[in-house]
Image 1 (cartoon, helix red, strand yellow):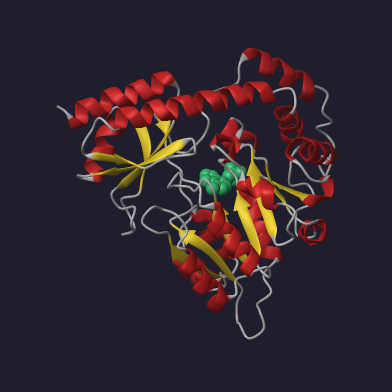
Image 2 (image 1 turned 90 degrees about the vertical axis):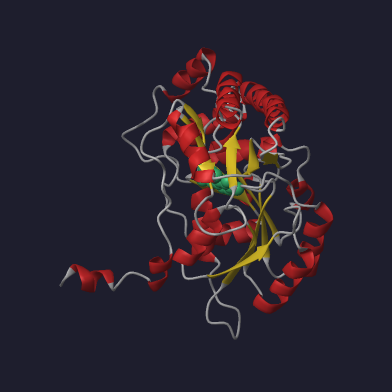
Length: 365
Ligand SMILES: Cc1ncc(COP(=O)(O)O)c(C=O)c1O
């Protein structure tokens, strides 16, 4: 069999999507991936090392991640059996795409709905699983266009809808009345609130609606300082969690990640909270600094990054930053509403200072 005939066996949808790419080398100032800029201090490492010392590396991990799920229930809310855990929330999105994919009567394929622009993996993962993806443009304040959303719900009857709030890459939270209208008017869809950036926001909308069976909440440790351990989760109605568990690989969360994540929610929580507070303070400072430049328009942010529109050649602008060892996320490709925008992750005070100096050099030579 030739490679071509083997390639023909791949799902047709894969022809339409590209693999998610990460730059191979990290620059000195890495402000492109919405990670925490803070590494863990020495005392946190001491706790981690004593927690993982003696882990039975020759055995499979606890497939149910019992202690971690109990800790999540205690610290985040709900009951342990309401949680399904993944190697990052990315994996949880894939689990939902695998499990909830039965087409509605009269439809050939299941549909997923999300406002646009938003986190790209909702679309990529769903398409790779054969779903129809319905993107509804956000309004001109990056809030939900609720009438357009209602129309799309009625027409497409999605199995799942995603709302990242705060939204990536726009940074804002969606209005709670608009979200509430959609949840209550369309109870036959699973409404997934992605709170990846919830720690940086003023309020959690998802918490208020966790009691509705049509609502699920996605969470992750990736944005608050532990991206490397890959731990994410979804909290949803127990009966739905029970079904979702059936498509989870039995040992998807390794033993070391389970230990560290449990620690992150308990002993390390005060350190992580301090880091979150520092990011919020720096975010506000950064926004003020960016506002000094008339060619930059900075959108309000409730997250650990800010979206900035640049009135000029965005590719040259990003190249100028890159030549100073500063990486930001550019949206120059794709011909979307974000074409002139960059997303800047909030760094440490020193990283932000380097960015601010660089912007002065590039924009006010
Ligand atoms: C809104 C949103 N959800 C989920 C994720 C993925 O998080 P994880 O690292 O837990 O897979 C990201 C990552 O950028 C994100 O922006």
